[in-house]
Structure formats: C-alpha cells, structure tokens
Amino acid sequence: MITPGNPAQRHDHELGDMSPLPTPRTAEGADALAALLADPARAVVAVDFDGTLAPIVARPEDARPAPGALQALTALVPRLAACAVVTGRAAEEAVRLGGLDAVPGLDVLGHYGLQRWRDGRLDSPPVPPEVATARRELRRLVEGAPAGVHLEDKEHSLVVHTRPAADPAAALAELAPRVEQVATSLGLEVVSGRFVVEVRPPGADKGLAVRRLAEETAAATIVYVGDDLGDLPAYDAVETLRDHGRSGLTVASLGADAPPELAERADLVLDGPDAVVAFLAAIAAAIS
Image: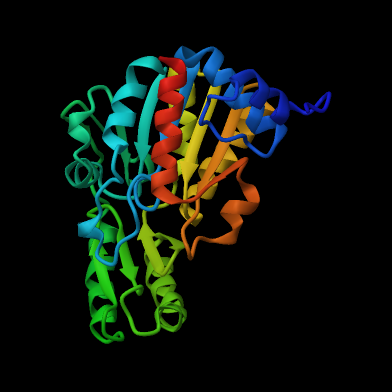
C-alpha cells in the first residue's frame, strides 16, 4: 500500500518490484534518486574509496575495491554528467591500488580534491613546506608510540594510524592531542577518523570537491557515498545544494566501527562496500 504524500514509497512504487535499488529513508533522498533515474545526464555520482568502494584493511597499501566495483563505475561513467572517486589518498595511489585507470572518463579527486586525475593526466599543486616539517615531527612521535601505530605518508598530507595497536582507541586518545599540537604550530589542519588522525593543508575537503563537480557540470542531482568523518563536509555540500534547488542524496557505507554521525545524517544507509557496489550497479542497470 502506498501512503499518499510519502515520496519514499512513491519512488519505490515507480521503480517497480523488479528493481534491486534500495529506498532512501528521507523524502529528499527518494526524490533525488528518482531525479537521477529520470535524467542521469544531469547527475553527478561521487564515492569515497576506503570503506566505501574498498573494504577497510589494517594496512592502507593493501586496500582493493570490492568485487564488481570497476564494472559498476565503467557502466555509470558514460551515462552521467560526471562520476568521481573522491578520496583523502593521493590520486595516483588510489588509481594504482584500485585499478581505476581501467575506467575511461572517471574523475579521481585525491587529497580531498587538491588533486585531479583523469585518463592518465594528473593535475596537482606543489606540497606546502609545512607538510615536510610535520612529516619529520610526526615520524619522531610515532617512533615512541605503541607497537602497530604507524605514519602513512600521502605526500600532501600525513596520517597517524592506530588500528593495528593492541588498544587502538587508547593509542588514538594518547596521540591525537600531540598530533594536533604539531599541526597547529605549523598552521595545518587536523581531521580525525576511524582510528586515524590526519594532518593536511587547510582549505581542502570533500565538500569543496563535491561543489566543484556540481558547478562544473551544472548538475541537477548530486549523489555522494562515504563512510567516515571526512565525508561529512561532502554531506554538507549536498545539503547546501539541495537548499539552492538541486536534488541531492547522501549515502553512508557503514562498517562495524563506522562513526554514528554518518548514519544519523545519511538519506540512505548501506552495509559496507559490497552493498555500495550493488547500489552503483543497480543504478547503472536502471539507467542503461
């Protein structure tokens, strides 16, 4: 039974019983998904990499996309105004680990949008000298940290990981204030996530990347899929674009230790990367 005035139920009915697409839990999200299906050439779909396209792993260099991810992206790219992977990683690293060069026309926005890779071409700004100073100081900091804690060097940013430690939460609680002190002294920004704390140049976040994609393409509909605190600025951007007359859908990819803020904010909640890939593939099938 469809309740009059319920956009989520109305959308589900319009798709028909054969569609595997999940129904967003908000009216705004349901309307955005319906708008994407009706006019995909005016839609942008942007997805995070770690925890969204690829399962979270203990060592960042071991990350690989969930099965079917490349096929789903390949099917989506030619049908949308833009399809992008938006990641905190360096763009070329995400391309290498994910095999993303197999997807023609895919935009890979690295370092929260500071970098842009597409079809083998990388546009990237120089690394600020403050990052080099932070690199030296954070290396010394990690040397005295509990076993398993390590520093990931993303060139434009630096990430302290505590997940492999015996007590990752305690290690993060101990190190985070010290990392923040280093960053603040150098005029850098600190961003926390799931058992990570990242130091990066100020002024770049995934919200900026999403806004740029929307403006460049004059997109009428924007979909963003993410899994961690660093994705919340992208949610903010989608919601702001909605306030200005565009359609927007925020999607959370939730793992076992995902921040609760993602589920609270998202129009649609999916059960990790496999479910994200199924969602992307279902969109591709529906608009083919």
